[in-house]
Image (tube, rainbow, N blue to C red; front, side):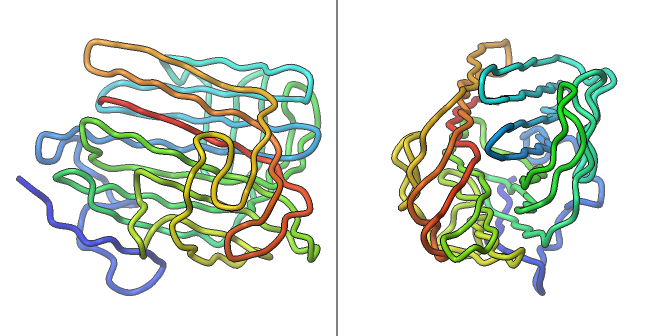
Length: 264
């Protein structure tokens, strides 16, 4: 069964009448399994980190990483255990204990293959707590995603935060490959906490996007081939320079670039 969906961006009227969070989404739809994940990142000059829990059909994956400017400490898991990743809290026993502040969210529903996908992004959130015993107080981004993605999916993504030349705080979420329609996309820049959609931006691999240039400092990468899934993933932490789309010159910025190709 093909699901006809038009791209929608909110908050606002016209939200598609489909199973969407916070409602329960069926485990299967049109022969496609439900995929869902929550990812939290925090970005700053002295420390950057991420943590996520993902569920692909009945399977679970979880991971975390901390870059302290000298060493990348990370782990990937096949079960959650005591790990908690929500839009407001991250707990990894003995590793991370973080509270995530609020920010104005952007919600997007998009067609994907024969079905649909959903996401909610919060940029410029404040992440506070401890990571590997060090204090954390940094800007970050929360990615909640769910849907019935096509069997073969690939995207390029950039998420970051920093300060504009004007002195205003800025955060961004830029993507090519999913939720990337010309309008009603997830491409968002938050200036002073206020979100605005920006036009499509060209990715230069993992070297930058649009007028933003990226300098990688430490890279998470994982390639695996399982019975029902194959994944090739690369996500470096690093610094940004140049201009933020629709916002202006960047004084300083930190964050991630990501390349992911998956069959699931």
